[in-house]
Structures are given as C-alpha cells and as structure tokens.
Length: 203
Image 1: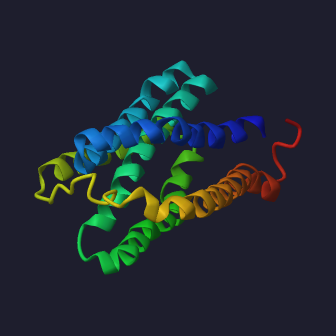
Image 2: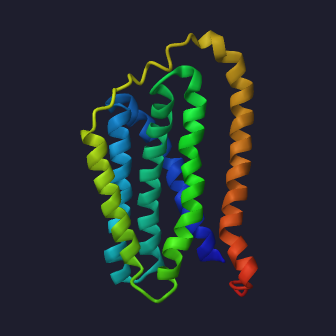
Image 3: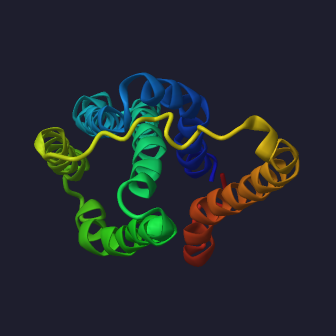
C-alpha cells in the first residue's frame, strides 16, 4: 500500500514543484516551446525506465515517474491555455473541454491495451520505450507544424482592479476544491484496485 501511494504522491508532487517554473518558462519562451519541452521531458522520463529496470529498485522507478510528472506539468500548463487562445474566444471553453476529454479516454484504453503486457511477465520498460518514441515523434511534429505563436501576455492584459476582489474569493475557493479533488483522486488510484483484489493490506 505504501509503494502504491508513493506512485501517486510523486507524480502529483512533480506537478506541485514544477508548475510555477513551467509558467516562468512559458512567459519567457512561449506556449509552443512549453509544449515541446513538456513532451521531451515526458519522453526522457519514459526512456529512463530502461536503465531503471536494470537497477531494479523502487526508487529508480519513482525518479522516472517524477520526471514524467514534470513533463506533464509543463505540457498541461502550456497546452491548456494555448488551446483556449487558438480560435474564437467564445468557443474556448468547448475546445478545452474536448481536449481534456482525451485524458479520460486514454485512461480507459491504456489499461486494456498495455495492462495485459505488463502483467504477462514481459519487459516492463518496453511500453515506456515505445511511449517515449511516440512522444518524441509528436514533439518533432509539433515543433515543425505551422501554428500561430500566441503572446503569453495576451490573456493577462486586464487591469488588476477588475478581478482583485473576485480573485481573493473565487481563486482560493477553487484552489481548496481542486486540492480536495486531487486528494480523492490519489486515494482512489492508490487503493481502489487493492481494495477490489484484496491485496496489499499486510503492508
């Protein structure tokens, strides 16, 4: 149970410690480079599973997952606002919701497609190696395809007095709600499978 918890904690800890640096990076270099950097960091963490398996320690796998989490933080911090800025502002929310819906779809398909291989005694690094190669290919395509570079200051040119009172209330309420959601998600991801299978309670 403890190791299962650490997998979730380390992943979301990566989000916590790298979200602000990701914002600084995006403010300096733009959304496109933020997306590419996130993809490359994700690929790096995936590739490191190969030497990680050779080490064969839990700490090595946790370190790889942390790097993947940092890549995801860069990716989501840049991709989400980038999606809202591309196109008509009136449909920005719809575009963001559609983009986010693929996260849930991937969460459903990945266990069905990869789970059988992982639990068949095969090389655990192979799925990560394949995933890293796919992500690198996506990063190369994204760095070459022509997309408009949206100025990062475009969405922040609003007077501070407009949202000052609203931010002090709604921002912190939303932050508390998001924290509660993440705690619940980590708990479910860590313990639900163990609860269904009846495994891990001795730990």
